[in-house]
Image (cartoon, rainbow, N blue to C red; front, side):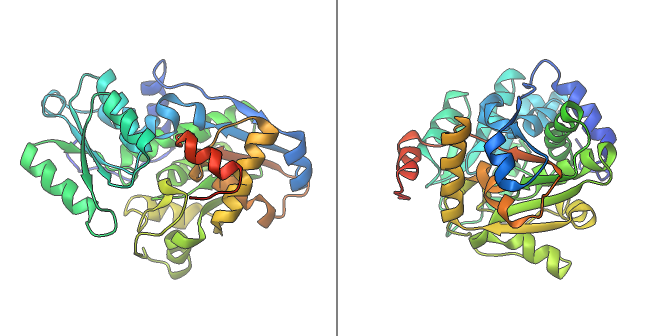
Length: 325
């Protein structure tokens, strides 16, 4: 990887699927008659990336990126920053590919995500997400250690890898009318756009982010990348401050709209998925479900990406009983 990349396309998503074959799970696609009826849709399909290796879709992009390292880059290792899911994905992918890994994680990252990252063999460096800039720390450490930085979303190989989740969804269920995707930095959404435009060109694509962190919605409205302060939300995987320079142009070109939901709506979605579908999904992974009531879905074929399931079980239990601490 020299950094002299071209914008990713559906061809890159297809190539990523080949690289991931036999390494990533083809996660199940489930339906719920109750949720379908509530939405008014013909059918709602849920792509269960909470059941992906490392517990989220992030494994797809991490493996696709690291697998393209040169021999020199493999020896020097990979460096990343993440609130948790990308951290775990980098740790696992690096272990599988026998590449050293260092991950910068915030002090308040969920313990389950930190422990899993360490368990995969990565070194973890902590920082204060409200007072320090992880991108600056990452650039400095990558230079000091000679490692290759693989950011959590703003990277063509990461975007292409994430697009494989949506490609699988379309190929399993056929063309969709509406696709609903969680948004943090936009890697999953940008990849979903690349896959969807090739496999279901008429499909409407909606991103969903926390109301407290609506940088994506603001960016789409203003036609430029908007930077915000780190938002306070239970959706820790979407506590990003801005979309990426690679992700935003794709999102701007292809997305129908970006919606927002409150933490209270996320808690309701967590309970719905647990009670109705018996699925453990983290708050960020529930963003799409929480936004379904905002859309006119009558008679439509709908897809929703459930992006991850890495949540501390004690906190998850509190959310289920109405304690959002």
